[in-house]
Structures are given as structure tokens and as C-alpha cells.
Image (cartoon, rainbow, N blue to C red):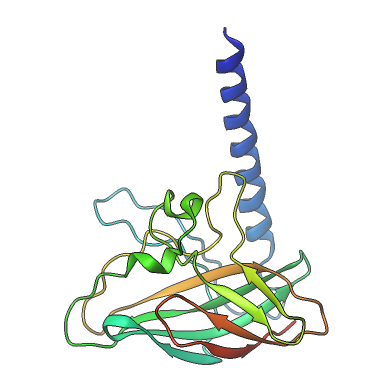
Length: 191
């Protein structure tokens, strides 16, 4: 066995272990006794039109951003977690009369993120008081921790979306959410 093959196998094993650990961590972050929602999990489908990976949010509307081609992003939650990150949940909706292909520029312009397919990897949070910009987190393979595999949307169709960012300081509660091609909006972080 060559050293190169061994190194590749070791990296693959480490990536698999990290992915499994993240999956267990996300599964363990469910609600407590008060939670009345059924347990849900995202899974990849094997059809020719895979569903995007998502996380569930609440129904409260924090912001509504208009984007290109009659796309509408409704942000329903921005929650600070004890793990040092902020999860932004929402819904991407086609508010127009025709089917829309989700624009590729929503992935941003970083080669590492673009290489991993369509996503919301171009999203950022801006702390105007602290004068700092927070980019979508990535896993060890460079994949963005956000909804991926964005499909085209038929008229009136919507999909749940999420994005995870590093957490601003605890004293920061209002941040500006930005996504390429969409209007910016100020959202309040809870938790």
C-alpha cells in the first residue's frame, strides 16, 4: 500500500467521522420537554431531482427579502446556539407566475463553495456596531453548512432553507443579513 493511498484513506475516514459526529450533534440539538414538534431529519433522495438539505424553523417572520426572478426569501428565525454558531432558518419561495431556476450566484464566488454545487453559501451576517462580517460556516471538506442542492421552483412553490454562521458576541443581537441578488435586511438573533 502506498503512502499516498493510505493518506487519502485516512482523510476519508476522518471526514466520515466528522460528518457522523456533526449529524449526531444536530440530532441531539432537538427541543426539550416543551417541544411538541415531531422529530424530523433531512435525508438525500436518490432520484434525478433530489430535495435540498434543510433544517426546520419557526413560523414567525423576521424579514422578507425580494430577490431576482420573483424569488422571495422569508427569514423565520435566527437562533444563537451554545456551540458558538447562529442558525438562520427560512423559506425560499417563487412569488412569480413562471418556473424559476435558483441563480448560481447565491452560492457566492468562493471556488471552494462553488465546487460543492448550488447552495446559499454566499450569505453573510454583518455586525454594524462591531464592524465585522460573518460568512457561512464550512465543514472539513469545504461544503457550506447551508441548504444545498437547490432545485428550480414552480410558480408558488417554496422550500425550507437554513444557513449557519459563526456567532457574533453575545451583546450583538441585531445583524444585517445579506444574500447576493437579494435586498439586505436587519434581523434579530435570539438565544
